[in-house]
Image (cartoon, rainbow, N blue to C red; front, side, top):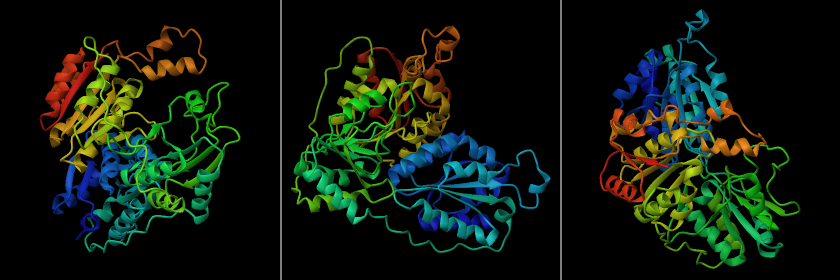
Length: 515
């Protein structure tokens, strides 16, 4: 075996069976190795941000890593924004990044760069292989790191000569470490605060605490203590819908979040940290928890949320039945001109059991999120790191991980332009993704933020930088040009018919919702 073959075979033996790829010349031996490795699926993305975002979506749904294949430092750099989101989500991802042959680097060819320097800010672990024989060992170590609870970003830099040199062999899959546990003292403090602390009380949940099994334990705690259950604003994967434990959501805007939390005297955090404002604003607070409230950190993102919540429930002798349970809901969809509310009502009505929603709908999607709380059981994936252009690639990865489940991507028109190449991958792989583009011809969130930071009377140049109507983007034509059938809708009736048709068929579809 050459080094590349040993590396890929080691990953396959560890259980990695999907490679999201955008390779270049330096990675041709890795391309050949993927080709020769039985059971390793190759999925091409036309931009590195699609590749890394897809690996994030795959990791969130499969709870194991895919491997990305990226071309040198610049290629990795193109994918960093979605690696930032993946890292914030706690997703397991392995990156293999090609580099020049070791004897070629000193010539400073045009694509020479500090690959390690590019990788470090968005990786939890970076390793450069030392030889063709070391490359397989690096792969095994990367897998063990990526699988660290709940998931980490592991990057291996592969010099081209290590990939093509013969004399290597696959190594055994490593034993993965057990999840870190929250200290017993933290469990005791949380139980005491929720039982005897001053009210009103809240149990604030994020990360793996928003999975169904953990939510059952959180619901038992709520039933025992009367604490309200609150989810972080942007969740990696929230399992919700009728019949599951109901959870409130912290508002996005800082002053709204602060007002929402103001009444609480006791706050216990599990799977996340106390919330702060996304940005600083003149005269507005960054820290959002109420002054004087008792704050208990039960478990961090990196500590086992299920074990922590189960331990607190046991300490409280909580009832077996969780509460509150989300009721099934329905909403009237106003006929006529399409609105965000009517989109939400139709989604609530038609969302299939087991659907996966990739949500980067920004200002337009709040109604859909709220209205779908009582829809059929589903998973809701959100923009964890705030770096836009994630929603379409995330849907690609989720669809690869769960081919028997319908994926629905809700996306704002501005953010979707960052990674619209994901539509081509959906078509190429015939992924079962229905994309809804909320087309309001604007970076609407930035129009709001312009006022919130105190800009008075913005002029035409400022407003032009937030406007997408000159020229208008035709998403129907763009989608069809990449091989995804598309339809433009302007009324509630048209949207319901288009969504019903898309959900009734396998394969990719796009609905351009004109707002």
